Length: 68
Image 1 (tube, rainbow, N blue to C red):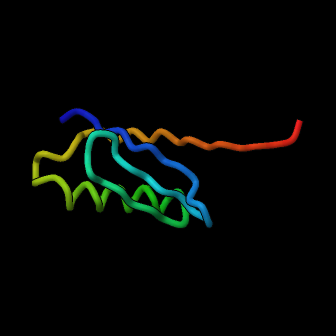
Image 2: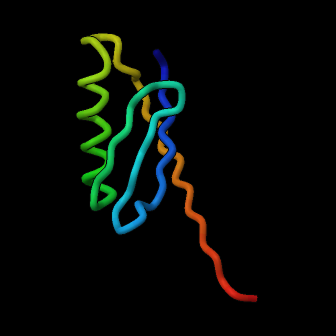
């Protein structure tokens, strides 16, 4: 597998959530650096040795609402 895409969003209370598109992989963390480590750990758990994607793409989606 060449790459896997994670959709990253702000968690409701604080931190971040990440879910892989097309796979049942979900993780969360308090900081961006911790999230990257959590994603790597989740990939190790989900994929067999040698089957893990070579590239991980993080798509960070942030929605902000403000008054006009």
